[in-house]
Amino acid sequence: MKKLFTLATCAMLASAAWADVITLDMNNPLNPSTIEYGDNGVWTQCYNDVDYTWLEFGNEKGTFMLSHLIDGEGASWGGYYWDGFTPAIGGDQTDYGQAGSSAGWTTMFGGCMAGGGCVINADGSVTADPAEPYFVAYYSSWAYEGPSNQVMFVDNDGNTTFEPVGVYICNHPWPYYGCEHGDGFGNSFAEGDYFELIAHGVAADGSEKTVSINLVEFTDGELIALNDWTFFDLSELGEVESVYFTMNSTDVGPYGMNTAAYFCMDKFQVKGEGGDVTPTELTGAPTFNGYTTDGIHAYFVEILPTEPSTIYYRVQYQEGEFTDWAVYDGVLSFTGDGKYRVEAYAVADGKLPSYDIAYEFVVSPATGLVELDANKTVAGVRYFNMAGQEMQEANGMTIVVTTYTDGTTSTAKVMK
Image 1 (spheres, rainbow, N blue to C red):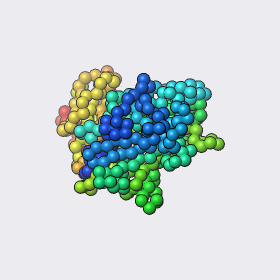
Image 2 (spheres, one colour; image 1 turned 60 degrees about the horizontal axis):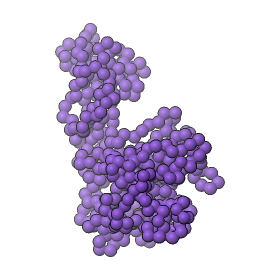
Image 3 (cartoon, one colour; image 1 turned 90 degrees about the vertical axis):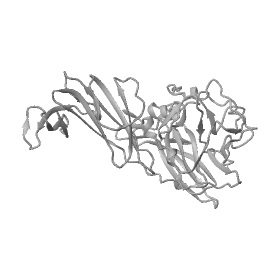
Image 4 (cartoon, rainbow, N blue to C red; image 1 turned 120 degrees about the vertical axis):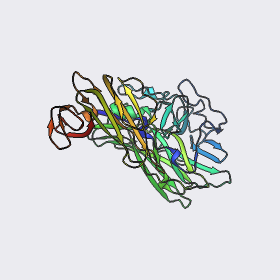
């Protein structure tokens, strides 16, 4: 079984591309007025079912309200149960499960597979910071006072309807590891299985619209999980009085889902006044064109846009630290021996950043060029002049045709 982990920049659906957005900031709590965290990274008042059945966060534009122990006093069963949203910090990624048991998760539930709270950077990229808080959400299908994971927004004029824009989500460690190898309740996933988060928008007339996203899915022999902060577009829900979340899994039993009903959430966004929301279309992802020339110990990488856009890239050498993100402005040249990884994404005017792409290769004069991208290995290289005549080596303007062991070829025009 092969796992695919999403890259941090793969989740770069940045709120900076929206015209006028109000974002829930967990560093501005109203109720409670301050938030303290225990050694397990969880809000110390998580089980307080007297004072905090709703959590409130606000700014000069309005107040966000999130359900917490929505069933009211006594809903924590003496400090043994909670549902809804609870603040957490630290981004613990530890697997606390044991073979045939989930007991380790009952106190250590404050984790987040992204590794910390969501940070939206100035260039539109999204990263995680263990010093920033986030919400851990537990979905209960048994709540009787209303949806267990409900979000409302009231602006400073008292208006209770709003237009959701989106929210950042990622996997919680419990369902992530449970889907990978099972736990005391859930089974490990197999082909066709999925774990789904569903957002319900409730309009003033009581009607509902829904949008959904898979947190985990097993398809084509691969387990794919959202392990970085990923933008969940909620704009299709329209004007609503509340948004609530439910969950669904293909692993079910007599009492409902076997998969642990947790997810992590941050930066809930609603449309503000004074501007239209930019369409949610993504920028087209760029493409790579990599090539070398015979007799020259160097490897060249072009990053090509699929539409007019600014391209950002970074480089990793020998599995070390990545360089800082930089604006791409010309062909990249690599002259040192070793393994390289180049990552890139594009941002077009009026669009969200593209998904991240990656290209890996090895520069080695002894063994020739080994391309790691798509597991391709070079079988042979042929050289042709501009008249189509084959040559022994590159000379002047040369067409280089590379054949891979899987039978595919690539062509590049180079100058020696």
